[in-house]
Image (cartoon, rainbow, N blue to C red; front, side, top):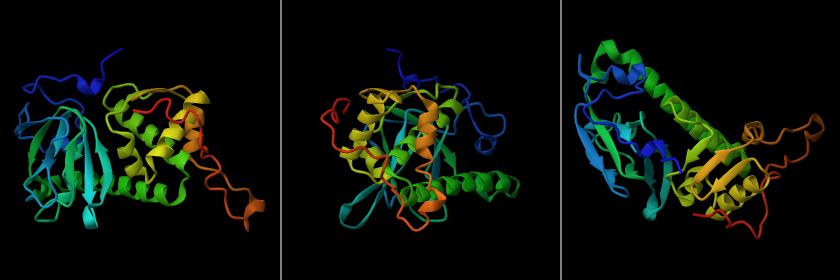
Amino acid sequence: MTPSPLLRHPAPSRPCPGLSPAIETLLPPGSARPVALRSVRRGEVLYRWGDPFSHLFRVQVGSFKSVWLGPEGRQQVMGFHLPGELLGLDGLGRPSHACEALALEDSVVWLLPNAPWRDPSQQAQWQQTLCDALAQTQQLVFMLGSTPASGRLASFLLDLGLRLRRQGFSASRISLRMSREDIGSYLGLTVETISRLFSRLDQSGVLRVQRRDIQVLNLAVLQQLSQGPRRQPTEATTPSPAHAAEPGPSSASQASAW
């Protein structure tokens, strides 16, 4: 089996590939290396809720999840972060972090100083970065409020594939580093529903699911699912079958579990 691209560790001293213009402006002029590197083992915390905010982090290698801690210790996964993406935006405008970030695998991040967004010459780039983050949050809220379970999972896989493609990797072969519990928390679904959906999509030929390795076989169907059920004009006064595409209990629901 071909190793996951997220496990190929580039040399820390080399220029960081795949930087967007907004992030590239944060590097010191003429610098080809990160401000500072930090290694984080799988399961370790990069920063915790309440830690003083002093840096942003750019994922160099590996992947992370950001988790919001609610009342009585309830946890909610707020996002997943891949190579080339920023971590720590939850601390902007605050004295401390509002979430915590945990490594999903052995990872490397580099630290960005918090001074650049105060530079007037870089405000436009930072505005774009923050707008992108806000748009992603709005998309998640919309998806949780109006999309059936099958559409949420389809949207999640399509978005993950798009982000991998931006880094030069395949968008149709995805090696998931997060657990099904993490995916369920992020999408507002139970782990049982996530398992049933993966099994149904595998059985119907939309995906090939081999534990954490996902291959998209029918992109058109996955895109259709992500759009949710279409309401006909005659259904204006009839409740929409929001969960019509959701699979029911299946004896094969655990066939591809991890």
